[in-house]
Image 1 (tube, rainbow, N blue to C red):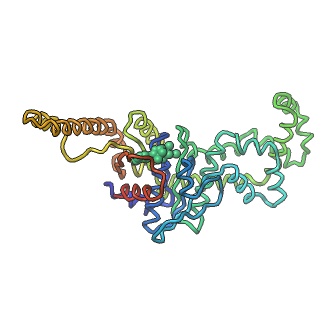
Image 2: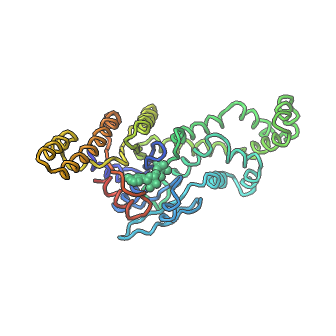
Length: 363
Ligand SMILES: Nc1ncnc2c1ncn2[C@@H]1O[C@H](COP(=O)(O)OP(=O)(O)O)[C@@H](O)[C@H]1O
Ligand SMILES: [Mg+2]
């Protein structure tokens, strides 16, 4: 594959996930890929996580929402964008899975629910997976482009559906659910010695809320498990492609290799690598040749040319050092589309520059 194959990545998938460590340009790249795909005629929705204020403004996603808003692009390109609202997504899942309005309300108004919806480890990741599943099945869109948070745990959403399935299948959960099915009242369950002990530790109110929550959940779990299974299959299918973003710094390259390894543990290969913020290399020659030219100019008495060639030698040395840093990563993702993007003189926050970046990635 070559650089131009980013076109294949965008044309041949339903979901594109951008990952990499913070500051490398993940959010920028996700936006650039989304615009590029929209330019190619696809109806694209971008889920962005932590856009800089000016980028959020440019995309029109200045607040959390669950409904993608159209982004104004010329030439008829169709792009929507949203900033993930994990809690709102969780609520929406409860509403669609509940048997009726009353059951949904009972869960949503339960204080224990409020707690797990915002704090349960993995629930944010699960909601990211849910949302991309949801949007990938939405008739309005052909392609979902997903930005990820700037943490090592960003890929946890891959495991989140499985974790939820395991949880709902867990013995403690089943045990808590069984008396509810048998028609026992909350009070009776709370009277069990072990629950009395738990209640003393976490507080009787919290425990009562928790039990009420699990009882309210009754009958929903099969739907949840089915859905989590479907989310899981999508993430593992070849309709979902992963793009790793890295700069030429050793630490971000190490992170990119870490993400690549985590993906291959799950039999997922990286479809694209964007090397961002690279030093421009100015012409074809090497640092060495510029240095020779500087010496020759110096001998000939042209100090101005000598100084310029020395400068050129310096920036080329930086570019050459960068090539050495990224080489193992390029090697690690062999077969993936690779794009090299130079560091711009200023930050990239406006749609025109991101549009140009997208064209550069496509090649
Ligand atoms: N090629 C580039 N040239 C110059 N600035 C860039 C480039 N790519 C990204 N940036 C800037 O770097 C900062 C971090 O980019 P961002 O996309 O938010 O990174 P991440 O999402 O990986 O943390 C932003 O201010 C962005 O405008
Ligand atoms: Mg970001």
